[in-house]
Every structure is written in structure tokens, then in C-alpha cells.
Length: 254
Image 1 (spheres, rainbow, N blue to C red):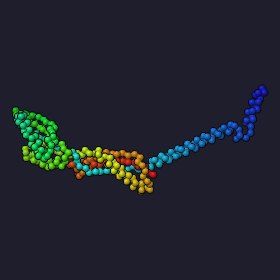
Image 2: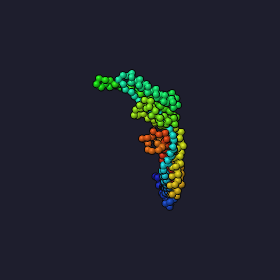
Image 3: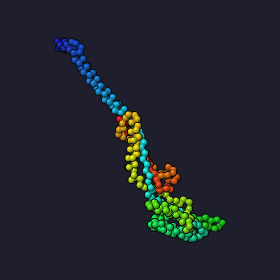
Image 4: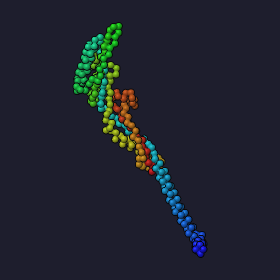
């Protein structure tokens, strides 16, 4: 009984006195202060993060262009011809004569013997009123890196007609540019500089400065005819090409 009275007396003593001096009150205020400090710090960090995010969103997207005139470095001339006769051997002999004329023609122009190679041969026949006609078709291909010599050969192709070689439809020369990989880095750098110049003009107009690149897309390289149509028809007919690339770049704005 006495012990219970002592505990009751101690509890009454702890709860006596001013409210702010009581142990329970001090624990409550201490916890509240820690919680408030955490909220303030978290709010500051969140606000600072949002500010940084807003600054990161200040960017401008521009495109840069680079173009370069190049000359083809590979010419491929596909030559098709045929002969028909009532006898297969006769048709084949006629094609062989045309092949010999072609070989002599290109040799006279200074091409090596292996520049002209057979690509395909086809034999067909049909019968009309009991008469069978055989047709032998031959296709040869000239492949050279000597573009000037190839152009000279094309200009003189009617000499083949004078020699009795009748070129079929579909015979034609095609010019290609194979050195794209060698000029890609320089052209991408040029396009990026062009994009930065556009971004700097934008920034100057808005009273800002251009920062680092946030992201960039190279785009694809396009090889077209230097003169005339921008692509497709006529592109392979000329050795004079235009290489073009467009880059899309996002610059940060300070």
C-alpha cells in the first residue's frame, strides 16, 4: 500500500509544474522539431531539383546541313545483245562475233582484258508454222574505276552499232560513289557546326547563350545527282554527285 502511494506521488510530481517543462511535452516538441527540419530540408531539395529540371528543359532544337559535290569512283556498264536464227549453232556464232567486237572495242579504248566480264547467257526458242527460231541472249558487264575512260566509251557506243553489235534496251552505264565512309566524319562535324550557328542566332535573339549538346540525331546520308533531279531517276546516269546529310541537335540554353 505504501509502495503504491509512493509511485502515485512520483507520477504526480512529474506532471506538476509548468506545461513546457514536463518531460512528455519536451519529448513531443523535440520530435516535432526534428520532423519540421526534415520537411524543410526535403522541400528545399525538391525545390532545387525542380529548378534544375526547369533549367535543363531550356533547350533549342535545330537542324544542321552539310553538302558536298563528289565525283563517282566506280562505273558499271551492262551491255545486252542477242541473235536469232533457225539453227542454234548459227545464233550462238552470231553472239560470239558480237562478243569479239565488244572485246576489241574496249581493248582499243585502253581497258584491261578483265574489265569486261560475261554476266549471263540465255537461250530460248519458239515455233511458228512448224519453223523453230532460236534466240541466244548475252549480257556482259564492264566494271572500272577509270571514270573518264568509261565516259569516253559511252560517247563512242555507236561505234559498236557500226560494227554490227545491236545493243538491246536495258544496256546502260551506272556511276556510283563508294567513298562515303571516308567523308562521313567531316560532314557530320560540318552539319553540327551549322546547327550550332543556327542555335546561336536563336539564343542571341532571345538574350541567351548556347550551352552543351543535350542530344543529337545524325540523320541519313543521301547521294543524288549534282544537277537535275534530287534523286531516283537520272541519279545513276551521271558521275557528278551531291552528298547531303541533315543532323538534328538539341542544345542547352544558358
